[in-house]
Image 1 (tube, rainbow, N blue to C red):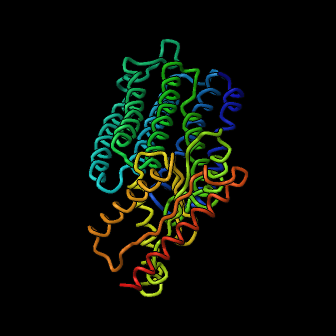
Image 2 (cartoon, rainbow, N blue to C red; image 1 turned 45 degrees about the vertical axis):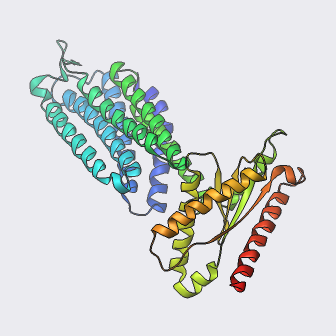
Image 3 (spheres, one colour; image 1 turned 180 degrees about the vertical axis):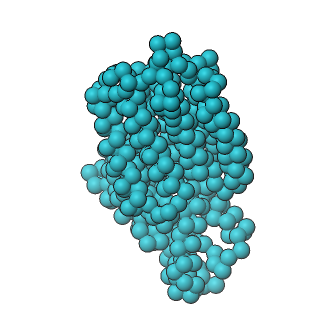
Length: 386
């Protein structure tokens, strides 16, 4: 493959890496994710550069035996392994949180040991001829263990995929499972790119496959920021409006509805305990909703202020009342197990799509809000009587 062909193939991935690098530097705070993404971008760009240098030297018959030959080939193998290791660290850093941090540390240590052994075997190639050696014509040919860089790199990528599958099977939150699915398929794409480059030397797809994976992560992050509430991590009002109209356009006969949820006495929490505690109450409420719906396909969003909404499939009012009771049970469990300065109380109103005029989905919101307000007034009246 000539240098011009390499340049045409690598131009788009290089531009993608440049955009991600600049945006990463400008917007992201100094976290491990930021540094690992920056390292991935640099390594991928370096891989493309080495590929073009090797291609140019081969085309002009300048790639002969000696230091130039093995330095470039060894550098190529080391960069691919470094990309795989960094990807594994990035995936583990994103997915292994909370109680999994000890497991994450073990994965880091094992992968670092594998890479250290691989580094020693690779840099000694000029003397051992293990990975590459000088051919009879003065060029470069594969050594008896030419497959070792491929095996190490694919093993590390497979490790990231195994992490995603392992956590996917144990995860109860739908949004987290979606992220784990994403990392599995992105890892598979990178593994295919590395395999193509390792087994068919003219197919240098390792760096482009990493660039495409990073582009997917970048676009997904941008979309997430646009449609996600920054405080609670639930969908925001913009995403709710989109989901409401999408549901309204479904064929007739679909039984669904929504819940409007409001935190009782939220103003008291803010005024007496402070806005930091108020923000904590909002996040805890979001957590209660996540745990309630778990693996279901319910849509959860923060509607605004201290109001939340849930869109789910309800065939009738009895099913909607059943969902309300599930939320109340999770709420009671939270209040019973958590020692805080406040207790969370929720007023919940529901509305079914079959109850409103199909031309105006906003009527669904109005009806749910009206019923939520009625429940709130009943609670106030009961409190005053007592």
